[in-house]
Length: 395
Image 1 (tube, rainbow, N blue to C red):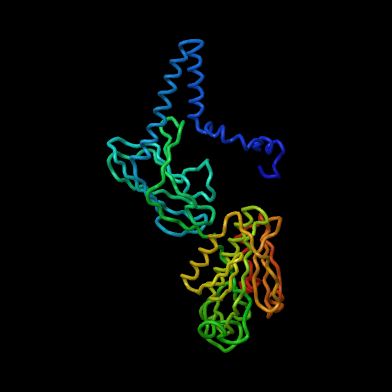
Image 2 (image 1 turned 135 degrees about the vertical axis):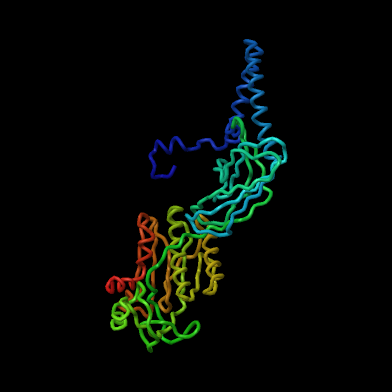
């Protein structure tokens, strides 16, 4: 148990003799207790009473049936498992298609698929898919909705088909014949407004100049959340009876350096929240077509501002180990625009935005944003840029 639990809970869950586990692992399956009871019944039959032989025969019949049928069930069936889509976000429902071929003329009961959506392999696998019955002499497809809750590239271990029917005293397992992978991307929250870091030269990066708050008149457009109230064209708004904003050709955004700390200095949930914040910020930069040089841990990421680049970015974030990995610390750089995403020992997500061209409205040259472990990420990330305050003024 974690150190914050009571001493009584830690005492009851501590393994004081790990060296002796290999001698008693066979008792983790119920069939081990049946075997022990059978041995005791034989001793009773030999030395005390003939009823021991009756008990031994009954227990042996139960063990034979409880072990033979699971062994047969996993070998007379062929199982294929694949998701309908190859990538989803966290907490998003995904449909898995399980195709099973039963080669015997009797139904097969109690099949389950284990170790597909688990991040860490363990002996107590929770089934990803469970079936009550498979019809005889047929190939059946079953669709099951699952909701992955943690990023990663699945499966992390080889999935197995398992069966413990009818008594549940022993579980037979066999690897699946064909398995297709599933990538679970970090959950992305919407960032309102536009990042207030701009360059000094028109068309410095990308194709031509883009809309901004200064420069030559380009046209008008509908009001979007994040627009300043002073840029509202009130004459055009009165004619159309909706807010119209004057669009000007402003300078392109500078190329940003984004640093993401992947070390685990707190809990697994803290690291997961940090990766979700990073995914949300990078996705917002991607939608604004702001080029970013990303350092994810000790790895360097380069991608374009298109659909393929977004997928590469999310795949890289999904590949961060759930328990973190060692990485170099984030160093301050005074000459470049940069965003640093790290974590504190208390589980907070620390976002440091450094803008060498920062003005009073942009929050100054450097500012830090702290998101607590119990704060709502959707609310905190939505108001990440201070620019969205202008929308409240205009509304």
